[in-house]
Structures are given as structure tokens and as C-alpha cells.
Length: 365
Image (cartoon, rainbow, N blue to C red; front, side):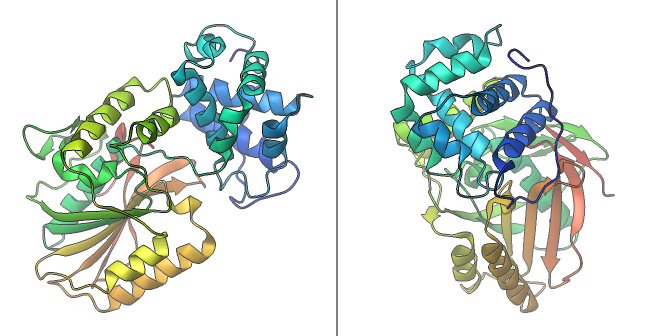
């Protein structure tokens, strides 16, 4: 890694940790996470930013990052900064960042400090909102979960509700096709095709249908708006070229028919949707990916309570399911889990998943 001789290890800390040292810990953890996720350029960018923070460089932007008032890990502060820096490069405003993003030798801290100092006004707004890390590849997990749920006897017609939908890219999963361990699902032709590296036995072969999709986000992104699409592009890790092509395909799909996306908190959305009538012969399914860790504790509690209450009234003809692709920080991996009612049994761990859906390790029979 140019500009740094250290490789920080992931430190398991409370996501809501604040105070002295929390900012640099968040950056070190992000570097470790990127390295573990085959993102060496992004790891290098984040490490370079951390080096600038440790240096004597000052300015409104750097001071605000150093003195972050919230929880830097929960707020994904390193990704906010990295997203702003990537946006500078993509816009052509900071060509000096070229070697860094091309993986070429450079004095990373000096190059990054110069870019921030020159374009501080453009960088500051990136600190004001959460990252938008929508990734279509994660939808393969949701489809695999639907196959499993259908194999358990739940109606194979699904009404999907998504938390933290960002631009709603995963809400268009009915327009994508999938090869999941040899199991083919989805339309032909399709907006996008996914074939994650599959380990373990194949998921159940089932015919499924998606009746409706709807999602929420506290700050929805409009894929049909060029500046919003550019914001999403800036949050894509530069070494993952296929994700840029996927974003372009999602934009084209949204221009044809927008995903059903509303502005709301997770708790408000779930509480409102779960009291609406549910069609017979339909499985209502709440789903989310890499979202739960960013929800405030009170929001998590309200969502859980709403799901438990709705589950108590679920029937075999109108069941409820909860599908998650979230981080297990005890092992630093992401797992696909499912819980469903009226069974109400404990959560079932179906698979381990790459954070962007590139690989799935199926672990159930």
C-alpha cells in the first residue's frame, strides 16, 4: 500500500463508540474491511485519508472529520470521505488523484491532502449524509431466500418490502435473472444477470413469483437524476468495475419504470406497511442488506416489535418472513438469515455472503 507501511487489523468495537480515538479506529477498520473484500485501491484511499488526519494538516473539512460529533463507525464516516474524494476524481476536478485510483505509485497522503485543500467546498457536503452503497448483486441472496421459503411450504408469491433501499436497485430484482448453484431464476431477456460463485449444495428448485416490491430510505436517491446517479457512482469501489456497468443498467431500467420507493424511516415504513391488508396466498417479506448496523437502536427496536406483532397474526395463507443480509462482526463476515411466521421459530442461517453478492456459501440442506 503506497504511502503506508502498516496494515491495520479489524478491531471489534461497539458501532456507537464516540470520543477520542474513535475516528481513527473507524478508518483502520474500514481499511481492514476493504482488504478483506478484495478492494485494495479503496483500502489504500482510506489509509491515505487516515494518514492525512494523523498529520498536521488542517482546514474546515479535516477538522470536522477529526472532531466528528457522532459515532464514526455507525455513521460510516470513512466511506463518506472516500466517496467525496472519488467524486472529485470522477468529475475531473482532481486529476492529481489519478495514480491513486489507477493503482500506481504515489505519495498518497500528500496527494489526498492537496485534493482536499483545493476542493474543500466540494468535499464538505459529503459529510452531511450517509453513504449510498446500493448493490444489485446482493439481490441474489433475497432470491435464494425466497426459494428456501417456498420449499418450506410458504406461498411462492412474494410481496417484498425493503429497508434502506437507497435508489431502489434491489427493488427491481424481478427484472434480473440468476444462476444460483445451477438453479435458474428470472426473466429472459433480463436487465442484469447474476451468477455468484456458489459453494455448498444448490438452493431448492422452486417456481416463485414477485407480486410487488416497495422500499424506503431516509434519503432516497433518484436513479433517473444524473447528479444522484453520479453520487451512487462515487460510492462504488473503483476496483469493482462490474458494479459500474450494473449501475448503468439499473439507471436504464429505472428510466423505463421507476422502482416504488418512499422517503421514510425504517420503523415508520414497517409499522405502516404491516397493518395494510395482505393478499391471500402471498408471503409478505421484509428484506434488507447491510442496513441494520446503521439504524439507531430505537429504530431497530420498533422494527423488531412490529415484526413480532405482525407475526403473531400471520397465517399459513398469509405468512410473514424477514430476510437479512447483514454483518456478523464476531467473525467479520456477512450472513443471510431468515425468520418466518406463523412458525415463529428462531432465525435460520442460510448462507455466508460476499458483501456485494459476488459469492454465496450455502450452509443448509
